[in-house]
Image 1: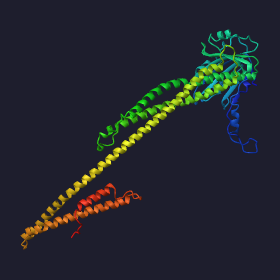
Image 2 (image 1 turned 180 degrees about the vertical axis):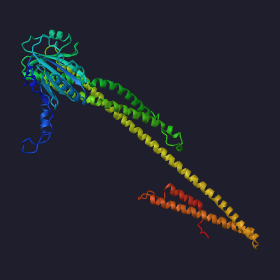
Image 3 (image 1 turned 120 degrees about the vertical axis):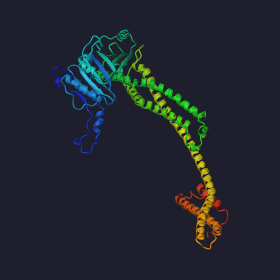
Length: 510
């Protein structure tokens, strides 16, 4: 049990500290190996203890949203607060820290993305929500605390000997707002609240002790405060879900438009067939739509990435709220809605909205992925068709060039023969002019068929050699299974050229 200390003993107070231990030391005293996490998993059961409370007591509770990386700064500010009271923070503080500040009990707890400060003072009071326990702390320290307050609550636990309040008095106490609550802990106490923020900026919760022990009172206060903090954290996902719903509605409309354009055939293959294959691979409609679809899928993934963590956290907090409500063991009072009924009526639809939005994001992302895959398949088919058209065009050009080449070969033979005969004529005329008994004109006439025939045979032999080299190169690069057979277009072109170049039977060159 926690003992309250007076001002003289405050400096010697031993704080309650929850520290996550280091790996279990080998000096455990056990004669056998010990798992390094044995002490860690055991200490986790006692990571969040409760403080025994004796009615009457007043409590102020603050929850600061600081993020997963902000608890370190909060711990630094906790050390500053303790230094104001002349107390040094222990070097290792785990999930909780509690200490008596001269009758003012302080409890600090670290959660995943928020920290809580709980101040309590035991003693009689006239007004349950009239005193300001935060006024006993340095105001400069309060103003500079990092993070943002998610919940601020004033709680009062009335003792059994205090006058019991009627329902009308409770409504007046809570500012004439509807009150929810009932018997808790098997009839050992009562809990009342309107779950609203009052003029002082705090929520108000009233507990009444019927026959609670100090431990029961401490657990009850802790559970009620946790319900209030976790239900606020769970509802943080609702604004994100509403904002995401607007973005998803726009994304669904745009995605439906893309699908309709694909189904209605607005991307006709004729749009890409109007251009000749020689002008390159151009698919403007498909490319434009694919770019639009990719950008839309990126927007959907961005929204999902921004909200997924928040939705998962809301679901986890909601489960904690339900567990704490079950642990209250509420009993209905005639004419008053229980705390469990009230929170279920508000929290369940909010969490269902977050869950539905998360599923909607997932389904929309899957639809966008399917449409993207279909459009990419269509683009690939169009590219293959254009590639085949380009290959056919190249084959036709190759055949045309081959015909032109064969036509030019005849002219080449004539040109070579003409210049060759001319050179021979110059030679024979020189001999004739030098006095040789030689008829130059007759010699030129005899040389014409010889020169033309030699030129024709030479070109034919060179062409044959080129064809043979090309066939050997193709045979060396063909697959081992024989797929590169003589039926390829290049081989057929070579054979056609050979057939056209050899209209008659083969003759050996002289």
